[in-house]
Each structure stands twice: as C-alpha cells, then as structure tokens.
Length: 394
Ligand SMILES: [Fe+2]
Image 1 (cartoon, rainbow, N blue to C red):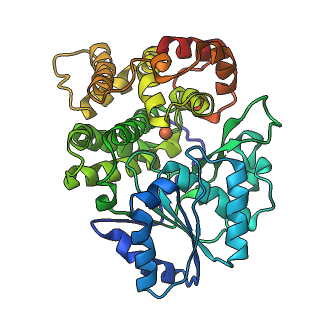
Image 2: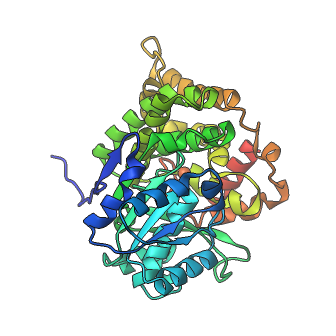
C-alpha cells in the first residue's frame, strides 16, 4: 500500500486568454472594487506602445492610475522600495503589471511590501520567507508582454539583492509564496506580436526549460506533470514559427498559453538549470532565457541516469517518434532536440561566447548552491557539480 505525504496544489485564480484581452483591464479592476491602480512597467514596454493600451483601457473605464516604470531588466530591491513609495503616495489599491518577467516579479515584490514591513530580507525563500508572507496583499493583475517567464501564474519573484549582507556581490534571490499568483492574468496574443526574434527565442527557451525542469522535478505533483507535457507540446509546435514569423498570431497565442502553463507547472519545482542561470544575469550580460538554453543540454546529460524515463516522455512531447527507440535513446533524442533548437534560434555556442568571464565560475558555482531551485533537481547537486556544469556549458 502506498502512503502519501501531505501535498498542497495551487491553481491560478483566473486566466483570461484571447485577442484584445488587455481592453478588459478596467472592468477587471472594478471587480475588485478598486479605485486607483498602480501600473508597473518598464521603458521597453512603454516604447513598444503596450503600456498605452493599458492606460486606454483604464481611461475607458473612467479609472485614474499611477505609473511606476523604473524597473530594470533584473529588478533590484532598491527599485522595489521606490515602487512601494509611489503606490503609497498615490494612494493606490491594486497593482497591475504590464511587462515581461522582470516587471511582473517587481510588481509582486512591490505588492508584498505594501502590507508587509520592509525590507525584503525576511521574505526571501532562502531564509524561510514563505512562513512570513500573509494573504493580505492588494489584488494583482498581470498582463505579460513576452511568452516565456509565465510569472503571471508562478509563485516566485526573482529580485536582485543589493544589500550585500548575504554575499560579497549582488545576488538573485527568490520570494516564493502561492499568494504571488496573480488574481487575474490577461493573456493577449496581439501584444506579443512586436517582440523581436532574439527576445522571442530567449523567452521561448525559458518556457521550454520550465516545462522540462518542472516535469522532472522531484515533488509529487501529477497535475503539474500533465500540464508540463502539454505545455512542451505547444511550445515545441510553435517556437520555430514565432521566431521566423513574429506576426503569426496563432503561434504567438499558443506560445503565450504554453509559457503560462509551463510556469504553472513549475510549482512542482525547477532544477539545476535555473540555479545556475540565476547567477549569470547579475555577473554577465546574459539574458535569463539564453542562459537557460545554453545550460539545459549539459544539465540534462548530468541528470540523465536519474531521469531517463522522463526524458523519453519529454522526447515524445517534443514531437520525436520514439517507437523504435529504447528509453535511453529517446532521452538522448530529447537532448539533441534542445541542441537543434539552440542552433536554429541562433543561441550563443556557450557561456563564454555569451559573455561570461571564466574566472568567475568558482564563485558562481558556490552561489548556485544557495539558490533554492536545485533542491528539486532529479540528481543531487554539489558545489563541485555546479562548477563542472558551468565549465561544460562554457
Ligand atoms: Fe525561468
């Protein structure tokens, strides 16, 4: 007889998916009986004309708003503090994130500190923050402008800690709570049409990495496993289409939904790829999705003996006919498919080519051990392993 440890599974409260979803923003604000949203965004989203669509929607509903748009590509605790100041000085009562992963993660952290005593330090996952976060935060509406991070339905927010009290350099840290899931995610394929090919590729490979790491993560979560595989099928079927034709709105929509599903799935856990990748964006100019794409094949090789059957299942989700293969052959075919994506999507050949200074690897390997993601990796990782994986990906 099998015994089960107690598990908690969380579903996103509401996902509205379809062309023009952003136009409904004001009506959703009103369902919370909110009066004044804080729009959190960044310069890229403003320049692409997407924030203007959100503002138009609020105007059409007769709602005033405030804007905080000083979010960096890897948001720091400092910009979170400034965002909270804007929220309070403008007397806002709901947070709307319009942007990619950095904007949505920043919005989550801003929202947290509107009801929780600053600074962020006690709320980071690596110091037991999960236990300190209450469900008394204002509503959060997310409008993702990229198809990759899926932060609109994920429980994490990745913040660059500049307080220097945990390490001798800035380090990315996670705030993890089920209350970080947005109250409403508005998935509007049309607003992702303008994404340039390099960003499309990087964010798409981030989503594929989420699907693979979630499916192989060690927590018992069959719901997430099913969603991860369907996400991989959709991402596999569309990533090349959106890279080569950014105006394929059907493929853009499937990527947006696929990335959302992959992020929902990673409440099951992620893995070593993310622990390694989280170290790179603060010390090298390597976007998160690019780092994941480069690190994924060597980490899959490292994990292979501990996840062979699951990699074979992933191969099938990635459209590979495995009927004449054993599990080992099928699993390796999945790794080959990731390498082929990296080539077709013009990813750098390695971390060195992407801009990493090799001398930093020992320190980055040590810091990767402090990241929570690898705790759910199918194979236990040591600091020596982390350094070796950085070298293998170099
Ligand atoms: Fe990611």
